[in-house]
Image 1 (spheres, helix red, strand yellow):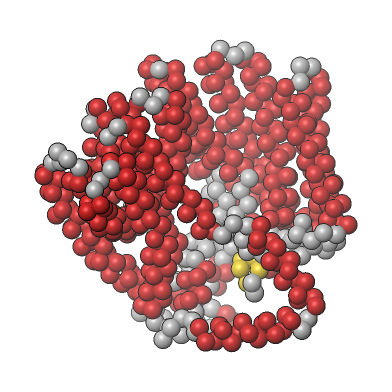
Image 2: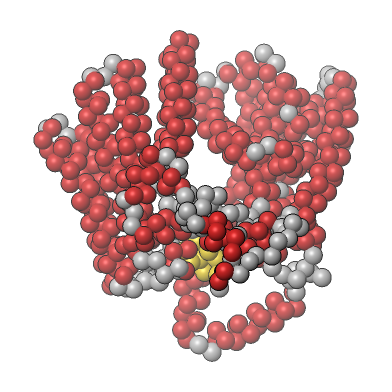
Length: 570
């Protein structure tokens, strides 16, 4: 049995074309949609550009260094990075995603679903094979290899592609997803920094080759083992590189065994409901759960599954208990009304933690400060890089905590369009925005401490006045809180077609919202950089009403049904 029928799809396309041809309104909609799709590049175009950049970059590195070792090391790191990306793709395909949930609802065997998802994964990894082919081809062209040795390039690219796939499956099975996501982010930031450093100091490539670091990278990474065999095609090569053939064969053998393990885990997995709250919501909860509905006793069955126990004990109806987790959370919980608590359960199904997240941010900030201080003992340039990376890592987490919206604006693909979750549940614009604004206000004390701490630390490094640094930090934190209303507007706007149709209401919306947004930018710049303290504080005070007015103005269009809460997939 197949998951799709080409004959049925062809017949359905013909019927759709006939229906569209008979309706002027549908023809106009098709033209509008076609114009939107033409303005967007296909999703594979960016990845194809990355493959072309990989080939050109490999040639440029080999040409600048004068030896292929550095280019092979760069290509090995590139392949290792995309092995991590492919492991995250495996998590998305075989985890709790919409495709897997929909396919499990079909009357087909789980093994067939696994084959379908595995084939899509292999098809998506084809660009990694293209990366290796273009990279090794560029090296062969730079080294001016004879035509006979060019026949080994496709074989080495296939071996490297297979090693990358096997490594991706290994990472998916044995490495937590948070570590893989952190590595992807750090690798991206380090790659940009290294590119800037090499661009300013091209002689760094020769020094790396002279110290033998490139050889350690190529022969130390599993994705570099097949690439190291490229040196056998060069004159004066080392026959000891043939010792890499057994590890290559071993990691390729692991690909098949780990694929079978992944298939068995996917087929045997069972989606069960996890109890929302382990703490009973009332004192008589245990008596009510023991008696069941209408006082009827529950049937005892020691062989029941977790799903049955969750249903029989009524635990799936228990309210959230995150308001009892800490003092900070209790303060927010007490200031939410009954409706807002229900909305908080909708937007944050796993609870809205505050203390644990900010404690982690503050710990990472202290570690970043220690690294910056140690880097300053070595070099001022190194200290500058440490400040930038540390501020980027911790600032991204702090900004995410301040602007968290949970699952409220998450899009759900249905009937060919994307529809935000809140629109499916009959949730209003103002009530959802008010609840999220209260959550951001509860996060703001932690954000204020974070910004002031970083401001004073940078002031200590650069010898800035303490008073001016403190005032600047407080203003920045206040402006970030005011910008939360603008972020809310963008969240609602991303799930609608507010600007996709040319109407007078659309033009008026763009003018009003754009003017208020520009006014906020002007007030923010004035609050931070005006020489007059009085005018600067006035601009800082007016920034919050301006952002709130933008939120209210967009809400008028939203509640007046000037646009639909749908958007075309991109």
